[in-house]
Image (cartoon, rainbow over all chains, first blue to last red; front, top):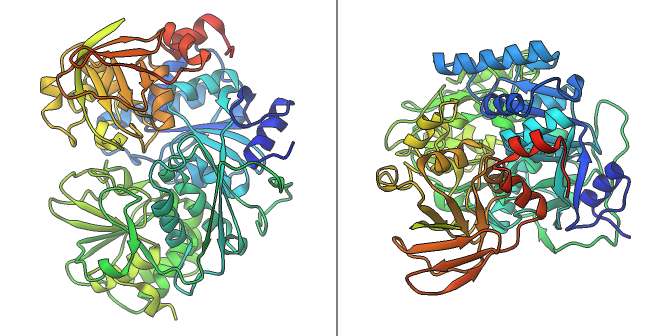
Length: 411
Length: 163
């Protein structure tokens, strides 16, 4: 039988040939929860009978969503996580170490060919390195911590082929926004999304993570960026889909003329070319998140802002995706450039993306953000409007005080 | 058998609208219920009665993995959520916390309709129009989890899954 990547990885894990639609119970290679999902997960774990987690080396807790704690209620939830990690001997990634998805990849908790379960909806990000990684809620995660297993339906797969090379100044974020716009917020519901084609082949791991990350905004269960061209710091065996595998649908695009993209309020799939949005005044620019808080994202922003100042009246918040990203951006001078240009750097973590702290927009304010979601109220105020774009677009818009096409700064 | 009054909303109701992220960091479920759906319909939490039914269109519960979303609805008194279809994490989360969810590709519900649901049979009747709709069948493992009142009780009893 010719298999998709999802079918292949799940077959390898169960020791049986699996096809789309099959219900399976599989062991997992790793699992994690954050400070949004862990408190309920730890409560459920205890209620299930408690005891020891199935394998402490494969479980992780990350304090990233509201880190450091903005109030006593959240401080006490963090305390529960620290206590649990200590009791169980599992690793807790402290405040400032970074966003769950970034640190799972950097610390090699997840590797190619793995089945990984994360209590966060952007877990499909690890499809960038060829892992079957899907998001769950707290109780499912508690069950994984306890049993090392999960029940799943083997997903149907769709394939998105992108031919051509992206123009200068057009990045992975523009491509995935374009694709989310085409597929829609629900177009890949329950499905595995496989990306392949020339446009992905030269992408860095960081860019591949940006692509796989927004599978969540298509409703997808997991996503895979074709491993052709994938480079990691360690030896790995990639899982390739079979050439005759069955796809529910195949989409094919020539992306060689793709322009920078904008997702307008208030759904990530409300995507258009940047043109009609150019000139929209902004109050607040943000670069960070599991989608676009990596070194290349800070570097492109620094390139645009080198020796310049952001527009008066605009504030610019940057949250590096991890401590390691932050250190690299210090070493190469990007952070200094950005600070000199007027950016406020906050600690690695989810920052203002989840509307809890570190930069909630005011009433009527307009945000240009490199995040992955712009639902109403997402950043903590339902009376603000969030536009999503690539880090280059965010930096150029901060510079001019309005949404602008960044390509002129990247020639 | 569940019978209740329907509150009807549209497509793509995301979890930020069900329970905004700023309220999710708590174990106090009453706090979640106090803010349920507030950015979609600020009146909802005042008008919802115990046993009421939430009806939506496509892709209900898209967005974040926060289990606080179905918890908020359940705690506010919602007895079941019916939608054309659900976002997958919300769907699992609801079943896992013992909140029934059924997918009905087409329905004619309007706000205030009285609805009678037989979860086992997967039938949903609109007592106003007299029309009956059939839900997409749930996998056995989900029916079993729901039967036990959620995944915590299910695993406590069975230790592992059976399909």
